[in-house]
Amino acid sequence: MTITSKARHLLDQRLEALGSLTHALDEITKARADLDSREHQAWLAATRAGWTAKDLTSLGLTAPKHPRPARKPRTAPNKPADDGQAATPTRADGDEYAA
Image 1 (tube, helix red, strand yellow):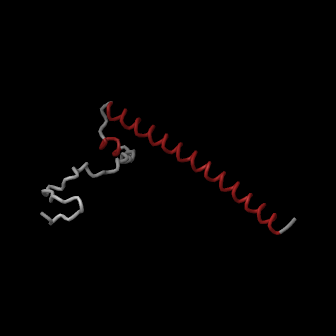
Image 2 (image 1 turned 90 degrees about the vertical axis):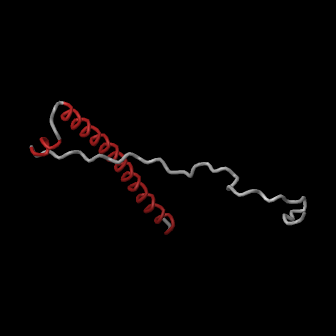
Image 3 (image 1 turned 180 degrees about the horizontal axis):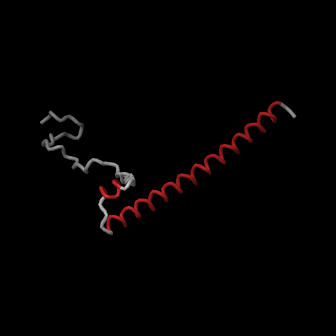
């Protein structure tokens, strides 16, 4: 076995471990989002049943964290091509000051 093939074998093992890690992290992220959603829904159900947030927290429960909704990227409104200034007439050769 050459040095290159040994190195490739080690890299392959490392890449396989990295793939397993990223797959596990993806699954954990999905599970966490599902649990957060279920927690939020249960909290809402309790408050709709008449419990106040103050009542629930005084019983030792912790209010779920409300994730901020994703904001849409702000874009500048479409501006007209005219910037409000009167256009200066130009001649065909581009000389705007010629009569």
